[in-house]
Length: 325
Image (cartoon, rainbow, N blue to C red; front, side, top):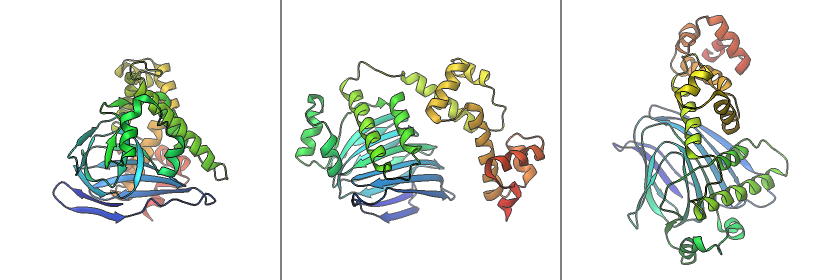
């Protein structure tokens, strides 16, 4: 697969070629994290791969519209989840333009596709799993009547097909399974089996949502949206005092529902997320924007620099001044 990423005015930011080769069954799971920080975008991309499966979780802050041109010569199914942000995918052959909105999910079939993506300049977070034929042919339920058109596209090896033209929300169970995948820290021989089971579970949840869209079995979309809205509000207001009662009032819910749902979805309490976010922001200001300790402490809402230094040491195990070395 060949990918090039550029700005809307044609400045190329990244260009690379890679192959979705299959790892041997006796090789360990590969798990890598790449971090980016430049004048156009910053954030991280985590990639997990093993026999027939490639997982990518990206969390990036974009300053402007980003253009991605790609040529993929691999036959595969991609299950895709867009948590935050907004993008378009354009297939060069069919000229079909697919709108991908926040908190939506879909399944794609690809076979020699060429096209481009357009990602709107805002924080984006997505999760995708690419399944090669050796994996999806074992587990994909091709005998389900509602999936007949999708199955036919695979059988005739179409260049590109999407399982649904409707944007379907990511439900709570899907969020939980994805979180289980990302929080898997096993290093033993069972990691691959664990991830395979979770992928199959996630695929079942997706297929249920496509075949039975009118009978939702999970938390309504509005509740998930409230949790993501609360998370985004905290990230954009790190220097303000984070009171649970005020957040609950702002997003038209109660304290218990908000805090319990937040912890289930993101694995931490609202207060701890706010505190960690402040300290990570301060670390960024000191290391990359050349603020001194007092300025960074004040920027994130600390009135006492010594209190800030103590909290920073508890979180990262080093002093803020160590970032200057």
